Length: 278
Picture: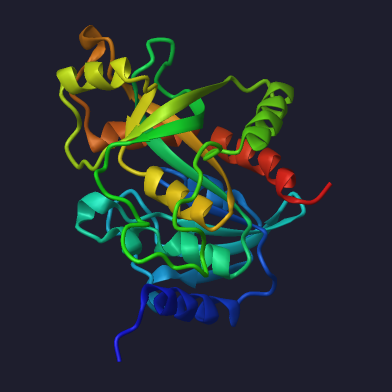
């Protein structure tokens, strides 16, 4: 008998639940370059993603392939180290399956990280940006098809896709850490090619401060589930104005993110107490 997507998520969640010591409150999905931060944490239970039924292990070289369960600042946390991307040829349900699994095992809050091209001339390479909104240019949506009412409504509202109170809380924490922080609108594209200079100019004109190839599907799926979401970008290369556009390699993107990853990790640690009831 064929399994529904709901069944696949439930099976993955049951496998994980049987192997963890607590019900996590916060879920984190790390992108490129966060190995140093995750390895600096108090290591709790670790599960290989490839061992979890129906979860797909990341194939991108700069992404790890582990589920880590640990307590950070008093908050029980699940960390999915690495993501899969729509550009790799996966279906959107597969791209967001990890988000749905995290929610099923107990996570009410989700933090995602990513590297992004900078479209706002006020941004600089290596800067940390909290997403305030997004523009979905992937021409695909993880909610397409028959709605799974057990997850959320047919037409979920996205006016507060990135939780404003959480952004405010985290921004205040950043001030006490003497950490420079920006907020901005993220344009999500399919990739895997980077945009042309004309496309960068188009995106900037449409109101985007950043452009990347992730974050958006995960946010849509999480909000459908009623999760509160915060997303953190590191500006990996400047894409606007046109005279700032230079050829960039994956190695350069990883290098820039690596240089900021520990700062982002400390910011996430400071942001996690928001997940606990006051």
